[in-house]
Length: 463
Ligand code: NAD
Ligand code: UGA
Image (cartoon, rainbow, N blue to C red; front, side, top):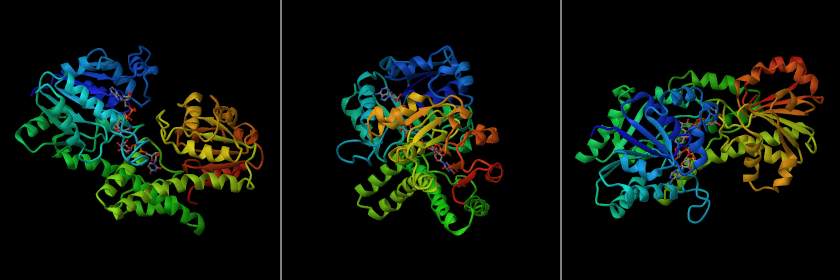
């Protein structure tokens, strides 16, 4: 089938950038991204590109080129479904907060709503693409809903998981390591796969487009995230051992990373991984394994999360311990709140949990992050429901200027690896702080030797 119209349900971190790149690379295809969230769609349509809802380097230029040419953002979901030949589902699939599987399983209510809506609206054959990250065998449920509630038209379900990382989304989309497309092994299924391959072939080499059966594709996404997160927990586990033994985790990471079988990427010790997906997807994997009675498999992967929680707690405990076992009424400045650099996303950021621990110890937290608003910081803390909203508001402040944020602080904690932190006038910051002035570098991004020469007491991770 020659594809001329694509619809994507969900204008979030995946749907927005992914569709913007498809539209840029395929000017002959009309791409409409729809969402129920009117505010988000209005922001995507904002004339001022600084106001588009997602900050990703390079995204504004792509949106500017394609928007209103062949890229549209709209709240008219039915219309976009009706017109499209391919419908991507890119809605959120958070961890369930209620009922069976609470705290573990993926909540598929948004996926089911999309499937029912597509079934109701579609009046001709459609290819439905799972772009969201889903438990293995979800396609079966989607197919059942489509076939049982639809208007008698044919649906093909493809799995096409997204591997972009935030902060590098545009580069990842333009030059992907691979595109994975899973589909039915029938003739019709293979035809549907080919239609989607043809879309990606507009800019991705054929040798990077991998086609599999649906279940392999669905499970590969969870597996990829589990392996990536496992590397971080592995290096973080070793960072604790380094701190006890005089080894340096940066040196250890370099030494093992030069082994081509191990590889050097994703071995950066940190305060713990954050982001909306690693934890959610591993919990989901653990739940699936348990549901098949595979308890050893479940326990193996759960340990990745246990280690990550430990690493976050260990960081806050170290701050308290080093500050003479009390941080009560002490100002502690957080440089960074986002879960990684070059994004305004704060979901599951380690900063939230470290702040929560320190506020439990009656610390006063001052935050500076170049891309995160003060409202977001407070909302993130309130979401934990640890204490009253007023109490949180009295315990945390946000600043637009990093030097102001650091003034009179007893300690600085680096929570995000923003490049600009390396360029600060650290002597000026030192002079404005309480003494002794501590720096806890949760990302190992600053030069500890230079900071120590200035007079700071510098504590990195794993050294
Ligand atoms: P998000 O929360 O940023 O966006 C999802 C959007 O879907 C929201 O704007 C929401 O309003 C909308 N939505 C929900 N139900 C809807 C409905 N019935 N109709 C219309 N719109 C609806 O989520 P995200 O970060 O883009 O993630 C989406 C999926 O992609 C998840 O499954 C996630 O695991 C996966 N994923 C995310 C990333 C990432 O970097 N964020 C990377 C790869 C995969
Ligand atoms: C991750 C994966 O890298 C993507 O391939 C995947 O598509 C995505 O999840 C998803 O499914 O949502 P993302 O969470 O955006 O992408 O960002 P990462 O670069 O993976 O970083 C995740 C967290 O791990 C961040 O907090 C980061 O600071 C931390 N990290 C990363 C480390 O602590 N050390 C490292 O060596 C690498």
